[in-house]
Length: 571
Ligand code: FES
Image (cartoon, rainbow, N blue to C red; front, side, top):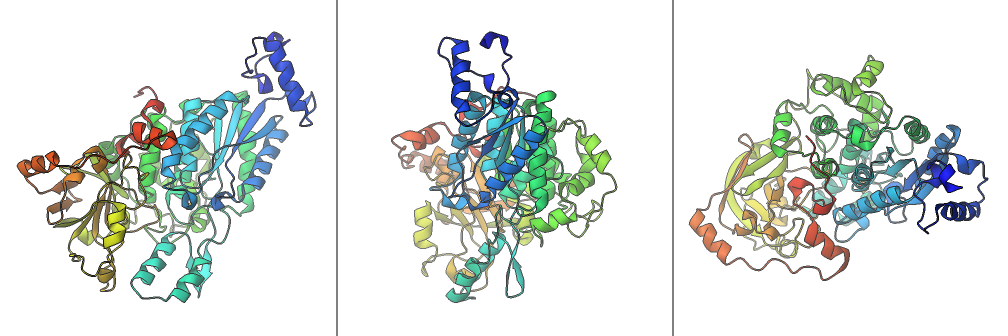
């Protein structure tokens, strides 16, 4: 029996009992226990990778999104089957969500490949979930559509709009500086994140949603739809229908995620003034298909890509404003002369065909600026190289204080996260506003999970004097919602013996954004002496996923992916 039936739908990838006909008979028997008719089991199957969880507020709307995707699949003649994967709620994971991104990506890859589905709709939203789903889908290479949960709406406090999480940090900074009272911060706590959805600014989740659309993995115009908007459900229904279309005319992720579409995504990242985390994630997604993302190429693109989207933390607005202003369609049209227009999306259309069809639609240029009047004439991110970061480091220049861009200063070093939290507010800490703060041992293999700790707090005594920004350097990451002159992802990291490990308080460090350099001004002989007496690297985790992570995670410049998950090189 099984040999006569084409391997589609639930007949795909049979469990191996040594008798294919028996395997299919058994599978059909068991799935019938869920009430399916024999007729509907003949349909092609669209898997729906659902990442809802009670530990993920950003995915609160998952049940209704799954229902809407199912509606689209059923109406198009398919059989939708939902399955769960790991969920990564940014603020609920210890030590960090990044550490579990690779685990989720493996879950997605293996379950998409192992279970019988002809196409899949991936539903994610919170920071690491969309990268994990794209990484898994790219590796499995089964036709896939990415659907995001969408951003939160803003809240209100005493007449002011609030959105997670740039405003979270602003209020917390004021509280630390003694400018607002405990009573106020307690009230604000309940007004920052007031609806389902992802952070309301151009943080990592929003950036990755836009990148998924720029790559061509999401339906056109869907990245910025608010989580609670009816259009979000219509986008979910359309994503289900699009997955059915992909079964009829297969397009695989490897045909959508290509060197050209990755470059388009980098342009979009730069024009958004998007999250620094996105460069790690896009590198990891591309890496699954053997596509290299070069930080030197990032700099070339950054020099010729203006920042056009006026959203916090770079500008003033929120994701709901971006959607109302025209969203990704508006941005891509502005960037058109800079983009590769022959890239393919999951709709089967090229980017050029899409933009031609959208020509002339309304844009609010207060939010999506024309290239003739950009927010910044150059891109939001820049890579730095030099003796302190031979493998590169990242600075979000669009969300930083330009007066600090050309600066030499005295290093004040914190050797670990614990050291930082113990000493940063010590009234006796030897630090001035002109110094450069350095954090060591917060990189990928440090055992910390590379936290978003690169946004070192301004020491309390300086914050109380009104200091709002200082140059800060680390091998950690930074939340996409943060603002500051912060040099991140220093590679190689200190735990791997990078030059960052050799910095001592009192050393001089020179930052030159113009020259794309970050240098440690200490002579080689002294550095060799210090290297000889470096303490042993941090102890390895003894077992389990933490051990796997420490043993096999790559550095930030290759996306912090596992070395054994990267794809074969493609040009
Ligand atoms: Fe989920 Fe910000 S906490 S996107």
